[in-house]
Length: 285
Image (cartoon, rainbow, N blue to C red):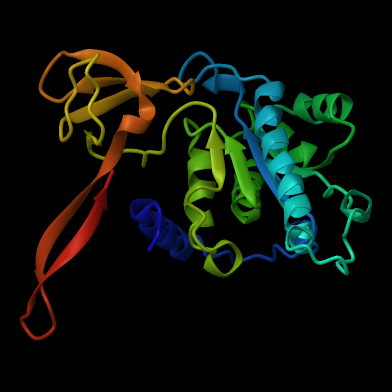
């Protein structure tokens, strides 16, 4: 089972279509010690995207999510190391000394951006982090150079590296970010189900050019009059706990708690190899 079957399917197609014919071993060296020190991928889309298709998001907004991820990792390691102490095992090597035994993980971030100044800003404001990325690729991603071969190759490399990071922080209004998230789902041996290994600062996930597919109300909302089973179109997730939606076939637009909506799970009858009728579950977005 997978938390986002639709994205998983797109990821399989994307992995096949984007089989690299070039060596990425140099770029992937940063993942050599990822077991002990995870890497977060941050994709910051600026330049012509701002105020046309997306709003401006400061570096601090991205790094707040990065901090939360690493704080969780550090807390998890400390809690796991105290397991024996909780069992009253006085012989545990961690007994009463656990916080002196474990050091925080090395905080590593891979930055992909079309704004070169981000690298200086990140190193200046977050000295406790190690940042990876290529300023030259960021410079080649400027609007005037975006059609050049080096620029296109730079974007491709960034997508591959982002898809290999342990956690993504980005804006799903960016196609680069969504593609990296899709490819991430195909790395089963490394991540398993990676459907929740991300944080987006704006849109919910969507496949560019997809047909409109409404979400389903799974918890009724008396204040807005939405009932279980109602279908709605997402007009925007405000990431403050609420989403703006429009009920299908009406002009009824409301703000409601985002957790009350879910992508639809539909079943379709199909014939098996021997003509046996079976039900196949489809996840539609």
